[in-house]
Image 1 (spheres, rainbow, N blue to C red):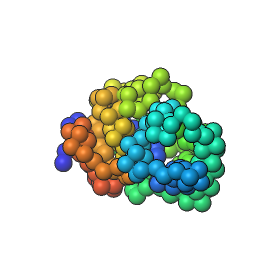
Image 2 (image 1 turned 90 degrees about the vertical axis):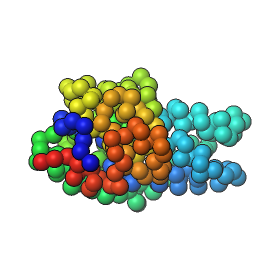
Image 3 (image 1 turned 120 degrees about the horizontal axis):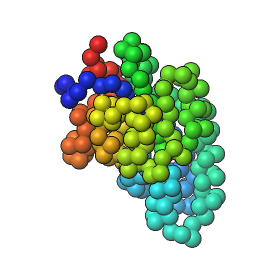
Length: 219
């Protein structure tokens, strides 16, 4: 497979793409829901992966009802997730090798995430990745979160490049929609959510892991 254009930059999603964190979020939320005497269908959870925090909370309200004790739920889920992150946060396969390849090519890169800057800093610091990204676009940097294109458009703006000259790497359907709407060469690297026909149509390719992505970017 050959990319449509030589890339001038790479924009990374974070959760489920750089870090194996989505499964930890899911485990924390499922545990908190169970403690409240409810169950959460897996299909519902995967449907919200990649959304902004506000959109996820709205989806949960629609699923569980406005009378559900959301304050207690979010607090308990946050405690579960923080404990899991401290104990189990891992890099996804091929992250370091891809970043080293981009260093060798002198290609700039950014993160475009629905998470908060504080979370990005925590995760990068935990794996000695601070300073390896030229820009971080996180919650608060854009008007509309994924699946709207705003995070990716802001990333291109910060890098000083046209969106169409950037590769976007995403693991979720909502993220792919955001990156493709921004006009980037979008590659899906699936994590919790399998690719669909829509994803195949929006992406330049579907990659098994970041090692495959690295081989797509020529020396």
